[in-house]
Image (cartoon, rainbow, N blue to C red; front, side):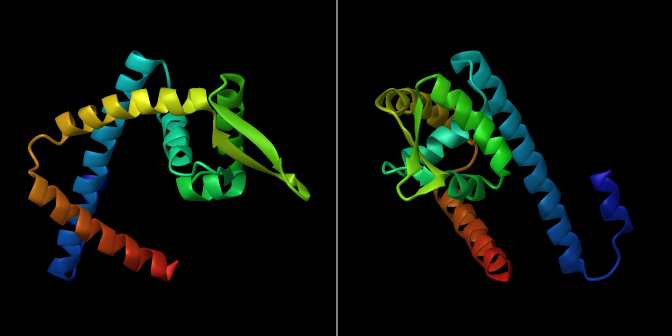
Length: 158
């Protein structure tokens, strides 16, 4: 279906190349994401969304509001609430009421959550290294810069 878009696109060649780029980025993202999902399940009996929540919280040792967490992860509050509830049950995340506002919760990693995430993150990094082994360090840095510029431009419009 996506490939059919290329055949139907008329107009500026630059737009066609941008469409090709999008399709390649989408395919690459799906391949990597699927590989990570399978490996996380097999090696750690966890899911990619759980890993993403742990990774985000690991960068915020003081914790995050649930609404900020869902906004950062680009998912609904309901999705984050379910994931966080299971992580709390597993002892990896702690949830506390925000002082002065009982409607909002702050979540943070527990010491057990920190340790478990560090263990997963080290293996995850090696998987990424393996999946992107054909891309040199300079090329990876360049691609990251280009994508960061795109992100900055896109976020300015939103």
